[in-house]
Image (cartoon, rainbow, N blue to C red; front, top):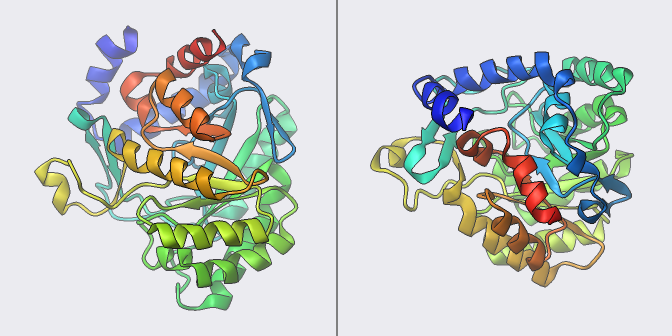
Length: 335
């Protein structure tokens, strides 16, 4: 009630990115004081995927906490795992501001942040500190993308860019996610084509010591999806994360039609749901599926799991529903 009646109305009068950074800063300071939700350890909610034990099936999607600023807060709020990033090898400021927009009536977000982050070397220092403190008791995933300064048409440099991030970061993480599906880095989605994707994933799979996931776009054609799944299965990837944000402007307000960027939240729900359905029809049992996009209720989660998803991730719903959402969802699922 505090969030709905006081904090949310206040936050929604301010710039979304400013609020995001301010809240992360607060959470980083109070995270160790948030008692870990006991429901995290409910036996009925736990699962093992790619050799990793997840205390529950709800994860924090990449993008919310790019630099692992407040891992203990997410743990305390009830998440069963967190995925940080997207991290690039080179530090970069991202796209020009403003670059994050709310669509309140649609309970969605439009972002074109552009992988703003401190770079893999700096993030490695942060993750080293998190691991040394040894207070994080849930799995930590790491989402890796291409540095903007690398020409997307220079295959050798693109592959080396991803490799460099993996070499610096994988020792600190439980799993790795390769991101070729963000719409906010020029030329990145070209690497989601089956031919380019195989060229990229083959050498990355060879150097990855941790389970490797692939995050895909909701705007991909089904024929391409089938080829991508074949590649993932042939390379023995750990799983697919479906999906990233969409460039579709269906059902968006008129002003959003003219803004660049990807849309998440309720407007992504049907696309993400459809991809969950199509992937589970086509994948083998060894390839795990993490479903993300428009999930905000117990019914949403049950639907994804019943369709064949192994885990789910949440981001945008937190902004509209508040920080107690995850514990509510877990309690409902446990019951």
